[in-house]
Image (cartoon, rainbow over all chains, first blue to last red; front, side):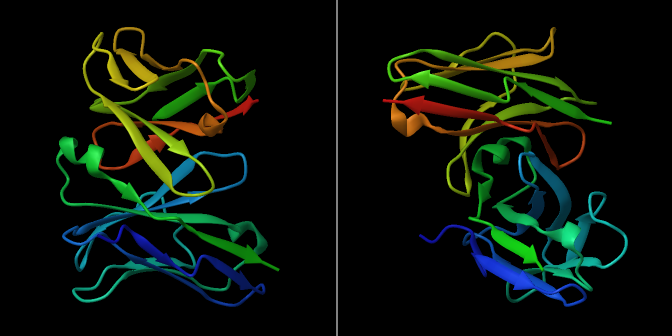
Length: 117
Length: 110
């Protein structure tokens, strides 16, 4: 019973390149959340998606960042023209639904550590 | 803007000590407060609290919520070195997202 799978675990990019972070939710989960964690900081919400729909992207920068969760395949967080300030750990979490009770069954992946040189 | 504040930010104790971690929140349309343990990388779920005054326990860990004073505490008794981690508090308001505090880094020395 695989958990939330994120890849790559570590990603190194030079300034101006694109970063693609992947998240495969747990089996049966159709809700995906992306969070960003800077050193010594808590997790900051970025975006909430269901299959083929962005439900809440209020935490995502308007420029350079985009997210998708297609009908088939993993959710992708895409960062274009990366800058040093994008260096952080990006976590994905998934749940089966949006009911409050599902908070207990919100599972996090191990994260992707993005380093921008 | 919704806010969660944890204290202390870091704590160093010896094995066998009891620790209390604090979490205060200001959240519109509060629905739940959650505690996570983060070792190495992936946060793992500990507790979800929705009602005041009801203690949740899991082994040596326990947590309680005070909705009047807007805070929660996480207690760990008889600490072990394996308890060393960052403990994250998060709250959910009217939207689906969780608002996290900065965490308390707990170090348990042998």
